[in-house]
Image (cartoon, rainbow, N blue to C red; front, side, top):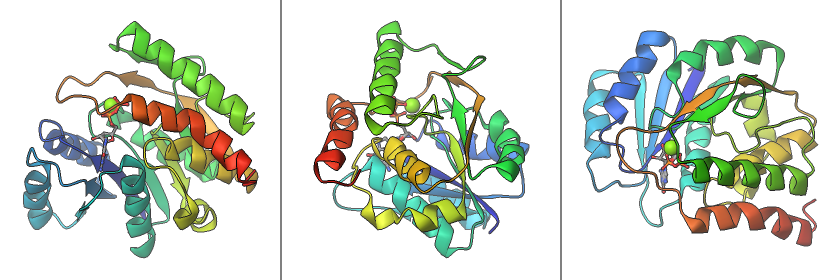
Length: 235
Ligand SMILES: Nc1nc2c(ncn2[C@@H]2O[C@H](COP(=O)(O)OP(=O)(O)O)[C@@H](O)[C@H]2O)c(=O)[nH]1
Ligand SMILES: [Mg+2]
């Protein structure tokens, strides 16, 4: 396995098959790791059927407490064990257009982390309610300031690409976040370790199938985690 794409899923039955097909249309030379949190809508069965036919598709089914953050980490851990050199992280709902995959693969040659950024010229979110976009911008601003991240504008983008050394060195077991707060947590740690981080503009499109699992609890954790880490002396 050279390049792996890690996709966390929860109730993405309407999206996952189309997304996997679309990814392989764009780039054949990669493996896809789906980390499903025991979705009640049958996402798991759809992926298992595909994985039985195509050995480049891998399914991890988690049990117990649902966690988007731990799912992302489990996916990266699996990719490392399988020997992936490059790991791309993306969502299942087509917010992250697979057309950008070749751009990640080209830009990662000169970086350790490449971020698909909504917060630099040319990048943005479309189709989302204005309030959600505003909330996401404010949260990103606050998280960036509270972690003291200076050289990255979109700290909460879950559409990004790493070299395996990044996942090796940040010690995945030490990450605290349960939800998407793990995204800036990883970035902060990688920045502190001196990894080279770059961004290029992407347009996020709002999902057309399935529903968002974004909750007040997730945003609260994203806002509080930097303070907890600071309090514990982690930075
Ligand atoms: N495994 C797993 N994936 C999740 C969970 N919550 C959300 N996801 C996935 O994480 C990605 C982002 O979630 P989404 O609902 O689109 O959040 P939004 O884009 O912030 O509205 C999607 O691929 C979801 O299916 C969870 O609890 N477990
Ligand atoms: Mg989404």
